[in-house]
Every structure is written in structure tokens, then in C-alpha cells.
Length: 193
Image 1 (cartoon, rainbow, N blue to C red):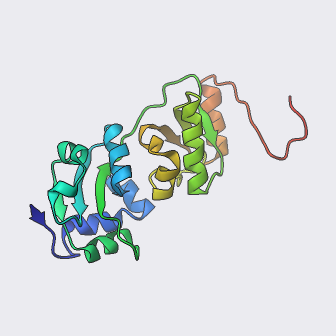
Image 2 (cartoon, one colour; image 1 turned 180 degrees about the horizontal axis):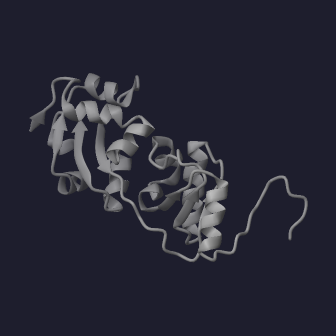
Image 3 (cartoon, one colour; image 1 turned 45 degrees about the vertical axis):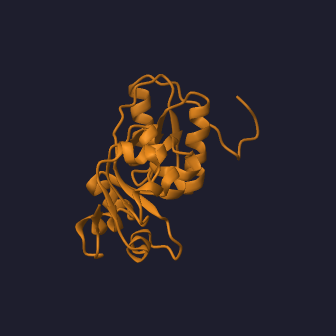
């Protein structure tokens, strides 16, 4: 067993930094908070660098996690609460690598100005239920790996192909250049064309 005894440990520092979108982009890594999210990551072949857990015994760690993650560290509940920035304990967390998938399908769902993390996750989960796995965001700050997005997508965020554009105009130019038929919806429309 390997123990972490300080919030200054490099693994703790990195995990804390990954709470921030800019740092996730900088390191191309994200924080996995909780057993269910870690299991979704494993199911989607996400490479997990390490796990930090408060469990006192290895026997309490899910056998699937034990089998799939090489580096498991033990820390106090206080250190883990510092990482997750919560008053309650998330007993197991991990650091995973963001995978970049190419957009390679005939059908792409474009998300324009969708900002609520729960809505983003729900759209991804619903899209994948209909066989849509390719998404474009018109916002380069779109965050697929925020905890609420991961939870709302039920882990589908881990297998999503996404491409980011700076704005709507760049998105439309890309779609036209690649011969996509563009169909739009709006809650403000009065008729169907």
C-alpha cells in the first residue's frame, strides 16, 4: 500500500488542479469523482493514471478497479475532501486521460451555446441512444469532463467524439466545406419547414 500524507504531494496537487477547466485542457487529464464514474471510465477504456482512496483496506475497493488500475494510493478523508472541494466524503477518486476522437460519421449533432453541464450530459446520453456519437460545440470552452456533465451523461461523455469551434460561423463553414446538410431547431420557431 502506498500512502499520501500531504496536500502538497504532486498527485494531490494535480488532482486539485483538475477541478478547473483550463487545467484539464492544459494537462489533457480530468478528475474522476466516485466509484461509479471510475467504473464508467474503465468500461470506456479510459486510461487511469492513479486512484486515491480513503478506504482503509484494499478489500473495500471494487475488484474491477483493483484489476484495471495499477497505481492506488491511500489518503486521509481530509486530503480527499480538499481534492474534491466538498464537505462530504467522496471515498475514491482518480485521474484519467482525455482521449481525442476524430469526427468520422455522416451525422453530427451541433451544440450551440449549451452551457448547463447537466443539459450537456443529457443531450450526449440522448444522442447516443439514437446512435449519434459525434458532436460539435460552437464554444471552444465547452467542458465535457465536468463532474455534472459526466454524471448526467451516465458516463457516455467518455465515448463521445467531439470537435470544438470558436463560434457559429466557423462551425457552419466546416459543415459546408465537408458537405453536411444542416438542419436546425429552435424553441422560438412557429412552423416546421
